[in-house]
Every structure is written in C-alpha cells, then in structure tokens.
Length: 115
Length: 109
Image (tube, rainbow over the protein chains, first blue to last red):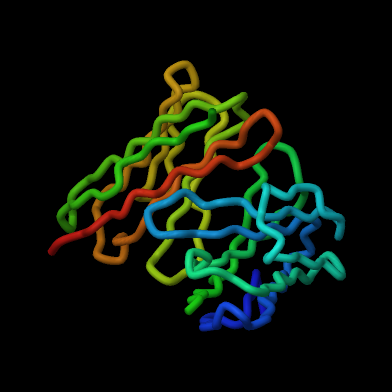
C-alpha cells in the first residue's frame, strides 16, 4: 500500500448505529487530518493530529469522535449520526503540522450515507 | 471572516485553454495551493505559490498576486481527462488551510 488509504469506501448507516472510519498513511508523515466534504461546499476541517496528539477540533459535534493510536493510523468513530452528516469524509496527512509548502496528501474518502 | 471565492462551474473545449480564478481574503498568507479532484477520488496536489508571479508546470500554470488577493490556474491543450473539480486553498497566518468550494470544469469534445 502506498500513500493514504481509507476504509470503508462506502458506508450506509442508520441514525442509531455505531461505526468507525479508518485511515492509514504510508508516507512517514507526522500530521493527520479529517475533513468533511459536502456538495458545492468548501472542505471543512474537523480534526487535526500532530504526533498522535489532537491539536485542532473545529467545533465538531460530539457524535464524531477521533482516535489516533499512532502516527500512521487515524480513526473517526461515529454514533447517533444525523442525515445531514451524509458526506464524503476525507483523511489527509502532511509531513509536519505547520510551515510553508505543507502539502497535504489525501485518501480517496469514505462516502457516508445516514438514513 | 476568511473567504475563498472561485467560480462554481466552467465549461471548455478539448484542445483549448481555460483560466480558473480564485480570490481570497484571509488572516495572513503563507502560500496558495491548487488541487485537482476527479469525481469520487482524492484531491491531488497541482501547484503551490507563495511569491508573486507565474509558476509553470507542463500544461498547467498557476499565477499569484498577493497585493490583489488573487490567483489563477491556467490549463492549456485541454484533454478530456482534465474534467474535474479544481480546489483553491490558502495557508493562513496560523498555517491552517482555508479552502474554496471548488470549480467543476467540464471539457467538451
């Protein structure tokens, strides 16, 4: 595996379900990100981790819970979601958290549908 | 507040040239990125500008004017595979990426 991988690619869940999204980066990067992408809207940064510590939480509802067990893996745990949470969830990584030319590498995303 | 503006959708003809504009108002500036995103796929890096001027990379070029808060992505010799969304993003003073909503580019034969 190379780059950034995400599983599952597609997920359909009911509002009472609990599920988790997984992201893995094979680039040796130190920072990882969760984004939400809705149609015709800018990417919304949800969480940022640097060296396994959360450094940013942009007022995301508590029904989204991130976990970063090591610098290569990132999870997003989901519970009691709402239909408006349906979107593409993208994971990204970068070599470091701050500094110029901080290119982010994205995974293919998980297309989430909440019924 | 911070804001990135780019057209929602553009249409161009195969073989032609298209320019996608991006204007920004951010708290500080540490560089501007362009990403390409094909439908159902990950955004992929195209270019990075931090100084004024034109950066050329094959068929794609990106221009920046910091005084005007303006950038454009120029695509030459358009191919059908260039049909995608093009995302503009600015690195602000806190080194946080502020994203535009993207421009969907449709290429017609």
